[in-house]
Image 1 (cartoon, rainbow, N blue to C red):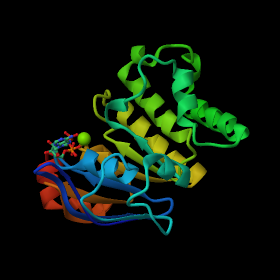
Image 2: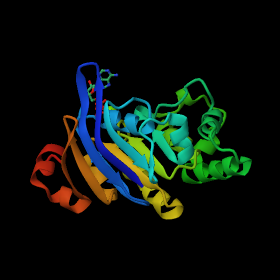
Image 3: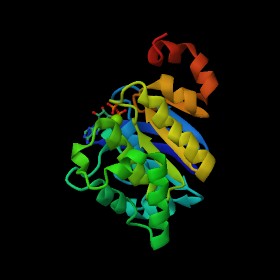
Length: 235
Ligand SMILES: Nc1ncnc2c1ncn2[C@@H]1O[C@H](COP(=O)(O)OP(=O)(O)OP(=O)(O)O)[C@@H](O)[C@H]1O
Ligand SMILES: [Mg+2]
């Protein structure tokens, strides 16, 4: 579904991605594991069309989307859950969700997606009128995921959703991506520093190091890899 070839991203003289190639298949859960500054957010931003790559190619469902604006990528079925559960803090929970569905032309689709989001995260229904900025960290991550789901994505890009969550909540939140794959056939690309939790739920993974793919393999292979164990699993 997603093919990325030799992607390069730089900010002035700072190279963030130095020729990254990866793939996500239909209904596949894939992790990009990397430390602070490895280039995870730069990768997801480039895939979403928020930063312009200096080189390389991104194709989605057989179409070259490398130069497409973000809103057009949303229409094609790509959505981003931004780092830190970024939402519009001054708007209500409900308004944030509605904005996530802006690209949908069908009214019923908006209503169906709202029901899907409330089924996944019942707490959001209880807080519809609450200002998003006053949600707890975990609730805000749920809202950020919910907002991305409002766009009916085929591919969900998720930037460090486990960051700042209490440990007990992490498997629960990551488990929702497994459900979305089973129930909705979505593919998910999870950028995570938390390799331990991410490698429990994904099918495959890539290790991103200084803007390059240092390693790739199935989740089981990566969990057993000596370098991954030492650098990311603290074993
Ligand atoms: N807007 C920017 N301007 C200049 N440099 C940037 C910008 N955004 C990111 N960088 C640099 O690009 C590199 C990759 O950053 P990026 O945010 O993609 O990493 P990350 O893997 O998401 O890190 P973290 O785990 O801390 O979120 C870093 O060296 C960072 O300082
Ligand atoms: Mg980041």
